[in-house]
Length: 91
Image (tube, rainbow, N blue to C red; front, side, top):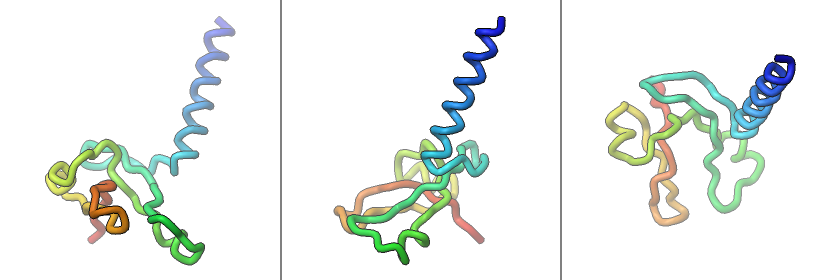
C-alpha cells in the first residue's frame, strides 16, 4: 500500500513539473484547457520576449476550430503565414 501511494505522489510531482515547464495551466474555458505559451519568431530580443506570452486554448488545431470557439488566431508571419495557435480574446 505504501508503494502505491509513493508511486502516485511521484507521478503527480512529475506532472506538476511538466506543466510548469510548458508554461503552466491557466484555467479552463470553452471546453479547453488554457495555457501560457510564448510565441516568438526566429529571433526574440529580451524587450519583446516579455510581451510575446499568450494565453492560449490547448488542443485547438485549426483556424476554423479557433474561430468557432471565439478565439483569436495566432499566425507565424515570419515562416509563411502558418497557423500557430488560438489565443483567448480579451474584451
